[in-house]
Image (cartoon, rainbow, N blue to C red; front, side, top):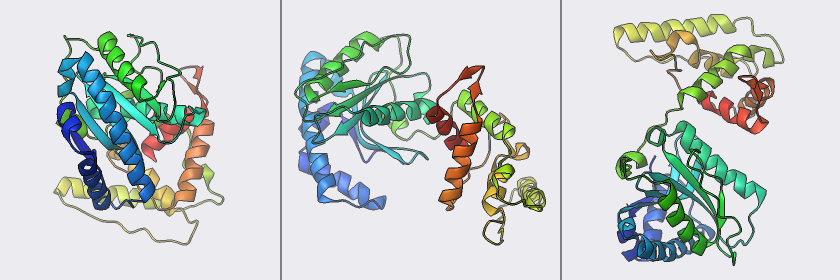
Length: 322
C-alpha cells in the first residue's frame, strides 16, 4: 500500500486544499476506511499547516520545491499510517500531527518514534537512510524541542514543534544531515517500497522463536501438532518441486492448536529462503491468542547480545514474525 496522496512540494503548495481532501477521501474509501467529519477536519488543518510550512521552507531552500510530500502513508504489515512524510533529497522526514493539541505527551512522542523505527526496520527503500521524526502539536504557540541533529545517528530524536517549528526543523535537518554526495531518494520507489525487515531484526526474531517453543504456551498439550506441521511442510515442498499452488485446510476443536500449527509452519527452517529468512507470512484471525503469544515471547526474550532491552522493543521484534 502506498500513500493516499503524493506530489512534489511545488505542486502541493499550488493545489487547492479541498482537492487534496477529496483525493484522501477517495483513497480512504478504496482502502475501506471510514471517512468522518473529524478526519476531514483533521486533514484540512494538516494540509493548511503543511502548506504554510512549505511556503516558508521553500523561501529558505529553493531546491526544496522538488522534495516529495506524502500524506497518510501506510507502513506495510504494521497496521500504522504516518500522517505525513517529506523526502528532502536523501532524508526521510516523518511527521505525526496532533490536530487541536498544544501538548507534546509521552505517548505521542513514543508513537512518533515507533513510526521511525518501523521505517528503519521494515521499509526496504529506507535502508541506511537518515530518518528525522517530527511531532507537531498544531495549537502549540512554541516549538518546545528542536532536536540537535546528530550525524552519527540514523534516527534523530523526536522534534516537538508547531507548524513554524516544523519548517525550521526541516531546513535545519537538511542543512546539517543531507549530503550532496548522497543519491537523491527515488520518490516513487520509496512510496511503493516493499516490506522487508532488516537482517538484524530478522535474526533477533528468529532467535526469539527458536529459543522459545510456542507449544509451551498452550493450556493443554497438542500431541498431533508435529504431525500436522510436517504434513503441511510436505505439501509445500511438493508444490515447490512441481511449480504448483496448493492449499491446506486444518480443522480442529477450539484450542486444539490450529493457530500454533500455522505459526510453526511459516517459521520452520525447512521453508526458509536462501538467506535463511522466513519465506512465509503468518496471518491469523485469532487475535487474542496472537497477542498472548507475542507477549509471552517478548517477556521471555530478556537480552540481546548480552544487553537488556525494553519490553516494548522485544514486542516489536515478535511482531516481525507473528
